[in-house]
Image (cartoon, rainbow, N blue to C red):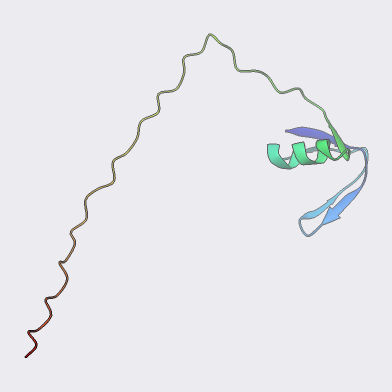
Length: 76
């Protein structure tokens, strides 16, 4: 997601200067926007309703062979 920084920010991943535009992962961009440190440059397009929904299938967990517990020896 493209943002424009309103303040300068720096951290272990690098620095971002005020007034510059950056293309960041959506979660990071939204965090900076929510904190007032940046503003969105491009609008997020809504999903068109004419597109079909994706079918989601589930996978079954394969069976695993389980060794039965060892029998305890007889006690006298």
